[in-house]
Length: 247
Image (tube, helix red, strand yellow):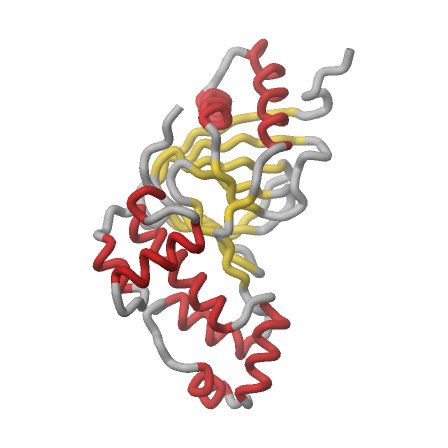
């Protein structure tokens, strides 16, 4: 009888990076499951970026150009999966990692007996079949004018300039900016700025910065407003979100 892992070749790699490491844009022939055993990284492509907090993972399809910034020191455990499976997503996604998926990824990345690869692969494929993507993506516009706006907000999430002021800076009408921004990113300006702030907050919180200072650094006027927005977006308060995973 064929095994669930038939046709899928797997390799692993364990790499530790210091804080501030920037890995230039590149692509791989194989699909990647990149698990952050510890630390937080931001994965950047031409059309979006994703924040990968500690204990989570990102799925990167084969052939996709991407760069990586390690906001903190990162213990990266990568599984390369060559071949096709109906369970493999076509797009990049950040995933919550179950205790079982975590142990599989770590074992494959750090070396395991050859005769255990096939059963581990079969288990991993079953885990991937039921995984849900986390809302940790920030779209990037194609339009150069809009990119000026989003780059400025990414560099300074606390920037509170209203949309009408941005429209004047970019030489656009406010109505045109509203329409163009949503068409290009799939988000309203307000939604995008909120997401940029929350993802920047994730990076800071993962680096153990205090919740109070993070809230003000990313542009919230009160800690309670920040905690409320964080919980609405991610389903947990900041303190609960970063609790170590339990088996």
